[in-house]
Image (tube, rainbow, N blue to C red; front, side):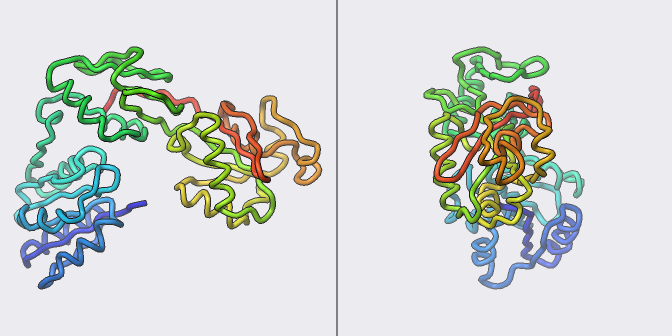
Length: 326
């Protein structure tokens, strides 16, 4: 997962501004050396969430051009002139947060953010920015353009959501079925842009010594059978007896999930009806691990136990209310 902000300057004057920005934004500042800009960009482009070039836009564009891939992978890139007058987002304005970062930089320098994305300059709803604000994953990023284009033509965009959305929809947006945007953690055969709310907890049970690869294989089969989009999972949970399982820990780390462990007594106290196993109870002191772990605390079981090859999975949803802010 990409983290942190890296900043680079090309002149002594620019370096002064770069150091100030790094201190304020919590980033790392560096002075470009002869022939070193390409190497610096090559190092930081794949690992940092944002890059800030203090200098000419052309220099920044030439540095990043060979490494640009797509919205899902590219970091936010902002270029700032060495006086701090202009902060220009040049890559990943919405999903990567470059527009927001440029605004923050302009506030620090007393300058102005030069935002050029069409929905922003026209004051229109930005579906990708809304998804980010609401904590949703975007499945088909190539479809964002179609939604934005419809708004720019003055047409209405319809958003279907299985969860309530507070407030009044913004101009040009209508809440309804069979729309241009679908908000759901279930796999769907649709031409709509699907946004996936990250609201699920994965309950996990496994035999001692289960390898990461085995967990991955069963997890893929579980999601396919139950029609779940993996990006909807926000965290994992299990019994404390599994807290030292390297395979389980690596599995969760690979997906970026924090994992919480509960004692047998805590699991036994989970409210609800669960799939019971006398064998499991004899081994670990509670009749079910995956379902009980998934629902704690205060979540609703949406997928009961799935068992294969010594691994069990279950899913629970934390009730979440979205709003129209973006």
